Image 1 (tube, rainbow, N blue to C red):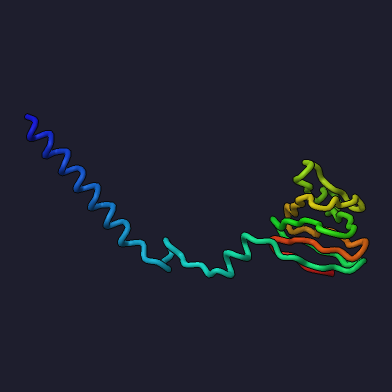
Image 2 (tube, rainbow, N blue to C red; image 1 turned 120 degrees about the horizontal axis):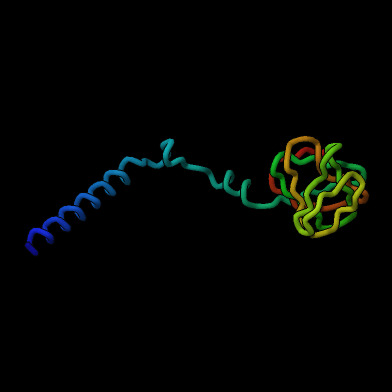
Length: 132
């Protein structure tokens, strides 16, 4: 009786181990199920880039773009109905609202939201954007 239980357990373990090996062998690096990405792609998605703007320039963010004003003065640009999200204080900034330095801002959609430089500024940006 004990011998048959042990044989059953060993058989199940061998089957599970075999299935695991087969599954690991089928995921080839670079395949659709295990894509290879470049360092530059990962860096572009995970790190902020410093951007300098002169007074009067606008930075319009794409969907999901994050902004941190590091120096200078800037005001928000909304889309006409909703503002740019100031995640630090949990509120929307409407057009003309002053952007506080070191606050994390989020552009929720690609609909024209961003910031306007009142003075020369440095802003950290993660995501897509255009400067006008």
